Length: 114
Length: 110
Image 1 (cartoon, each protein chain N blue to C red):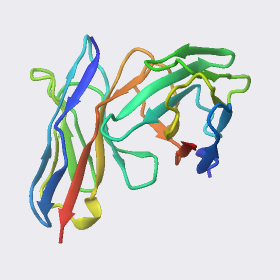
Image 2 (cartoon, one colour):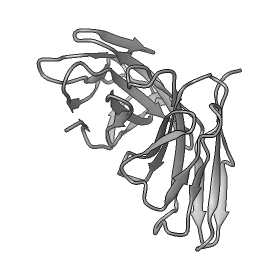
Image 3 (tube, helix red, strand yellow):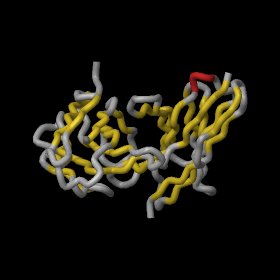
Image 4 (cartoon, helix red, strand yellow):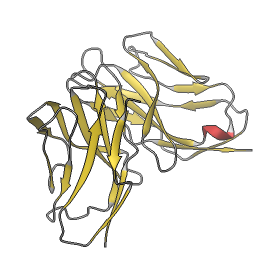
């Protein structure tokens, strides 16, 4: 079955540690996205990538980093510079760049920093 | 700028009531418009979409019509069920990404 897989579903980390969230898709989609979801704030775009080896900052990129070495994979690293990292993180992909086709979402990773 | 504004929730209705969740957007050109649904603890799923003016998207009894003159894409359902309880997001395609509204939580009472 085609889809997007995020792992793990729940993640706990100590304050000050970097942590990497995995996102893999087998839909052959060019574009991939990372969103952060907080209660009452909807989805905010962290980073997005239109093609392998290229990515752009979204609205809240500070304290995060990404890579796109393979078409299928778009991992997100939450660094110690992110002041409030506890949130629900959603990865998505879409067939075309340009926002005309829908995005497909993973099941999300809930990150809790203690 | 590019933005999506949807009505704030939570919205609480009784089963079989009529549902409207308002959504308006700012845009240049002709963006694609989407409604997504999120059930507790899960990612978002596409509910319906429309890609040009006057298109009507529909799925699972939900409908939304792309109204260019009012820059709106309101979500409607004639008779809601308890299983429709979820968070609903309106979204629009921008040149290279998708922008989401803040979401509207819907509670349906039996």
